[in-house]
Image (cartoon, helix red, strand yellow):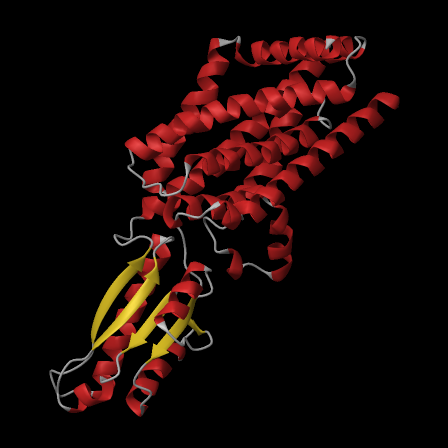
Length: 369
């Protein structure tokens, strides 16, 4: 009990140190909200390729010609044929395909009779920017098909579109949950690194090491204080996400806060791992941005992970932002349950534990030398 009270006193010291300066308090809460507003309205993405699934009820020469039009370019990548609407829903849900083409049974008959059959194109609307571009390409392909096979008639294919998970194709549905993860990792990693470096510059870290506190206790206190501040920051941002941007949230809120907790563990672990090698504030800032910026840019928000080189894809398995963005989209838009997100919880917890242990071992080794 005495050791626990001693640790609580150390934890209290960390909170006071992080929050005692009014400018620091403003820095913790104001920049994420401002960045959320700026990037929520301004950030865009690029599209590399579109995995395409086809549900061909007609199975005629005309339907095969239409499918060939889709696959005869560098945009659409044909996946194994869909066997039913249920199979289509499952494969969109699991991100195996981004676009589904549904050809009706009487497709050829209607074309030959001079009528205009309706072809349905269903897009994964979780990434609304990519979905919008993919639907634009689909319209272009069908226009080319009409011009090639029915150039002198008014008949042709009509396209009916539908956005899966995001019917209005709102870019904010994709961008703003992603920004929650990116801005939090940048802010928390920098906060932890600067706090550690500041104590080293002031000499208070050496004084603390002369007390009964062990290096593990010192790092644990810094980490817990940062996690507490990060939870407050994310809760503050969530208010703006839900009530200003009006982004729908369809899962249980406790799943979201459990995700926040595991993600913050990973972010703080990275911050501690960076900070133990920094002896000044300038070094802490430089190394934080060296680590955090690639994590943010290669998280899958700006560039689809599937379009990256294989080596980068393997390295990004260790990127906590990549997993957090995937989980946030599933919680916000899909209504995912605990079992659906459990693997991501375990991955983020593992990243946080590994980086924290690495920071502790490195710090202990430094003290011995």
